[in-house]
Image (cartoon, rainbow, N blue to C red; front, side, top):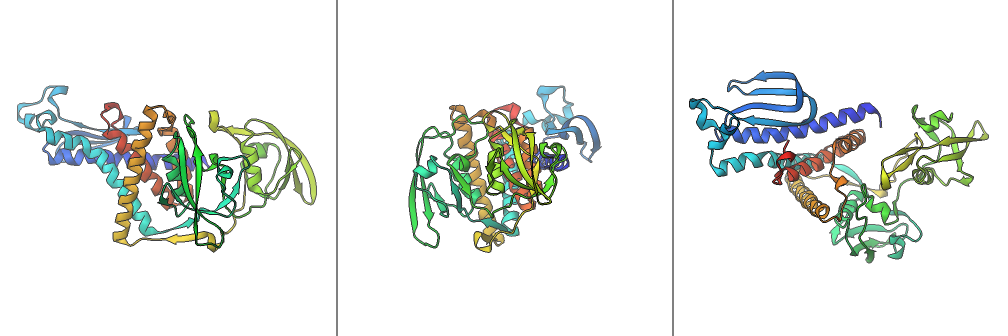
Length: 403
């Protein structure tokens, strides 16, 4: 991912969510007759500022990591007698609750709008077909096999891998039985499968629910022929070039590109030997892999990519909703993500999930940037997920979280 995409994705994510959140406070405060002194997006030195007819100062500040709405309040300083009735503290309890809750509710509304737009925009979903099952894994113990399609998890239908992942996330940190229903290739009869969980991924900072079960999603076979090499990565430093065909890693032949990716990720910071073919000649090169992430989420990085291939039509399904259906789908997704966020917070409080799962600026940067590169629909979905998380967190009685 380029630094430019990361930066742009971060600024858009923060700017949109903060502005909408603070506008919720601002709009309801005005309707309740409260004088708004300042509406700020960002903190620190103002880059832009202007005033409206009612005397509110609007500010765009240098540090885009939050925002705030400052209202007239007798508890924060002297108020002219003629403006006393416009003070926040003079309003009824119902009005003050409405003003405080308006920011988070604006986040829920924004998420619904994003989901609605994406639903009408339409998308191609990848059917959740298992590409491989790792030996001695939870999936193998449950009888899952290559080629099976996961059509339901926890009794909820799963039309794509995102839906599978969402249902799996709900079971993080838990013990018990995970109920799946699968279709064999060419069959229409759903078969039940049960995965036994024991404090599943409890305490893991960046869990990978699908991978931890020992499941690799099906994807087209990618030949290990380099199409691009990151100028700042280990591959470039070792002299690898676009067009090189990778043959083996530490003497073990490579089946395909995914085989290389899996093995590289498992070797962060390790020195390896890669055999590759260039102009018909096989050569060996030694290089030290870079690493990404921390702790259990740490993984190796080569700094090279391959050319993508077309997905077979039978592995894809087109999903598009009409205006009314889109609203209902948006409401469903907003509710589901809100419940998931609350459940995750509860698990964090009881030590079942790592508190590092709360998204900070770094996570926003990584995911927003990646989503921006993936396409408009994926980026808007990410913004919706983040907006819901912010809405839920800001409804909690913890003042420092607001803004």
